[in-house]
Image 1 (cartoon, protein in one colour):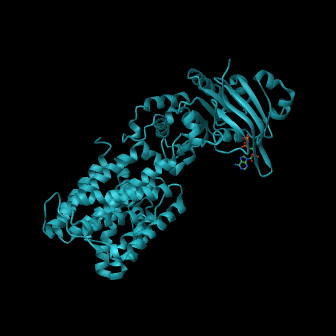
Image 2 (cartoon, helix red, strand yellow):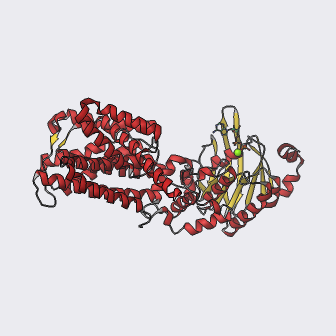
Image 3 (cartoon, chains in turn blue, red):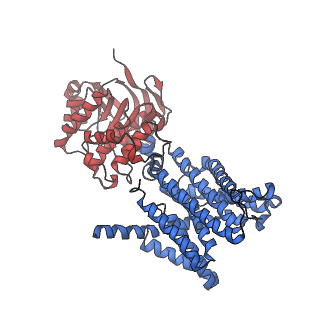
Length: 318
Length: 247
Ligand SMILES: Nc1ncnc2c1ncn2[C@@H]1O[C@H](COP(=O)(O)OP(=O)(O)OP(=O)(O)O)[C@@H](O)[C@H]1O
Ligand SMILES: [Mg+2]
């Protein structure tokens, strides 16, 4: 157990130190860190699907499903508890994931990617057009919830969200790692290398992919509900294709070979966006573009690949 | 009284102008090892493709243990107890060999809902023994992608056997193995099949292997079965010698 999870435990400690120390340097960073962790959870789902060699360009639909589950609850039922919101977000993502998944798991590669995109655009336009229920492009404001009955000041709450996001991120990281090492997770990788053999072992590649798909949708929904609370709003932008692209971008940036890549990628992405947009207004996309080009050319295994190569190098040097 | 395990009747399949199966009738008896021989392009692999549901014949049917499986998927047929080893190995290239076998074992024993690590499944030792049996134990921790062709074939056979099938169909099992090692591999393979009462059909180009291990031989020629008989009868037939063996 300790040996196998050495890397994850190490990363958890580094993360813990980061969320403990960084806010001391700059309190404004608290919300940014929470956002990084929440998005990392979504990207974890993208990485799950990438194990099967499939790229979804529509995962923002599940992200939005989680966010709107929270927003609708607040609007139609009343302010709920944070834990309830998270459960709702995950369930909304999972249910939508099952419905869409039953359809898209029959397809592979470009067809898989584009079908996901198409479904997400349907959701996006529904959110835009059904003004009466969704406020259209303005979105729905999300009021600050309590956490297991405890209420907080806005300041306190930003810290609460940070710690909660951290706990969720760590739990998701360990759960995904466990899943990927299990027989079903291993079969997911087999879809990428030889689906014919998988079928000839009596295994349904579609069912294996469906489990991965729903898992990734749950993660996206969970992340979406977190982001809705962190940003206090859910808008149709959450479901827009550029958002889906952003998640894939972060996954490639961080590296798809290890679950930790999700968080490494999200951290770099959000930091660049945060600081570059403060300094250079509209140039942050360009900077991120160059960062990604550099990663693809110089380190195709992503940021996490660089770390891995280094530690492997040190180990063989020792 | 022998029991028929696999029964093909009137199989026909055409690819454009090529008739790869042209009225194939064949019964495979329980417990026997049936060799399929015939020149390149005769339709041997096509027969295995039809028998495992990968190709649907334009006419004819296949029964397995009395059940019509002609329209079944490869997956459904596998679950009924037919496993296949391929002419061109079909492996999970990014997995290690032992992981690949454990995936097979997990499928066989329905271990899909578990969150246990694949590496820790109780079938691990059994799979290591299986690798030992096919002479590939030393490759257990290697990724399939780095293995040379000969070893890939052995791993491919092991993946079929890992399912503990009732019937195994092997497409040129010894083609990647050096002549000197063929008998050694076949000795253990056939002994293992006999020990578990597994019926087998194997496509083979090496007549020494056929002579030594087959109970019966079916001779394919242009999508048809030319003759079926014991190796002694068939390999002495002048027509077979000229057309198939080519001497
Ligand atoms: N899926 C397919 N599509 C088109 N033609 C095919 C297909 N499968 C087989 N054929 C053709 O059918 C004929 C029989 O092929 P098959 O692979 O069954 O031969 P074989 O007896 O296994 O030969 P070999 O000894 O070379 O493996 C060949 O002419 C082949 O080109
Ligand atoms: Mg062939």
